[in-house]
Length: 433
Image 1 (cartoon, rainbow, N blue to C red):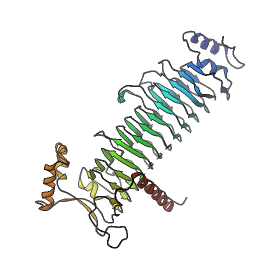
Image 2: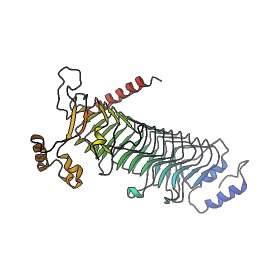
Image 3: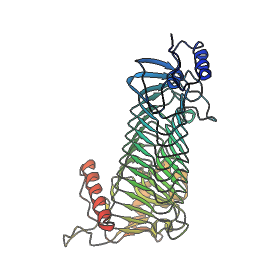
Image 4: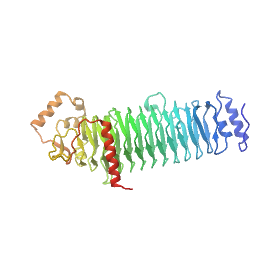
């Protein structure tokens, strides 16, 4: 038997919810929302409740890990239309299946929502922040449907939503984490696995992405037409798709890429050539290790700032679509495990520049089919003969005039911590405030 409406709750809304409840074997969440006064906390005994439901006034729903909200495969499970709503400790499951309508576990259309410590599964999209901003999305566990990755929805999707904190979420087997026309967000300490794009920023300037882990996905962090973005202290591992990359940047200004650990990827960092003088990247204090290609530059220009990075055991450290895109970057004080010089004065800097020329690499750069033979004895013999008796002048790919001496195969985690500390010191020195 359901309680009567409280003062201020219309009989029409009460009867509509009560009538709808008869079609479901589960108690309707919407009824409890209607019976709770504005600014109050919804008291839900442990159990499973029927959605979809819409929140139209400031409320707090705390399930303490004992409450499940079942959307029964219809639309978005919870829709938030009021400011100041808190959703905590809920298990939210079974949204609708429409990509066009963006059926999600949680759809937020207002400002200043707090969504934390929830578990989301078997939902097409996870959390959709549509408009507004100032939200906190923290410590949620999000998983999409068990379908091919392209048919899943995004774990967290921001659409014209600004100034949010996305922190400490665990995302597994969803599609992407998307920021579209969404500026000045902080994305901190999230872990993303088994997806398509770890994060994608499109027309979304001013975002800070720090301390995240992205692994075993098709690509890591993609920034497109988004200026003033900071990517710092992230760990990106095991991205082996041929078309994927740990970090990719296209036509975005003033991007700070620092103290990231990028390992075992097809391409560590993919960047287009700058279209304008200010359209450059600041790539510093990163560790690139065990990648097929650590850095790949596309286009005819350079001018990126690349300093104090460490390159360890990559198949190829640097490649580009044209030598100009690599040669005219500003390289300095990077550590290269393939450096063949000495440090006779003991200052930690090689006595000669680290110069990389193209020998047999020109074959597979110009003819993609030859990539199949990279590392084979046949191509290695061609490379050896070209170096021994060059029958044409080799092309200079790039030169680092002050290479740091490689420290050897030290522990990668310790190397990353040292680079992170150096990046912080460098930032504090350049910007004391």
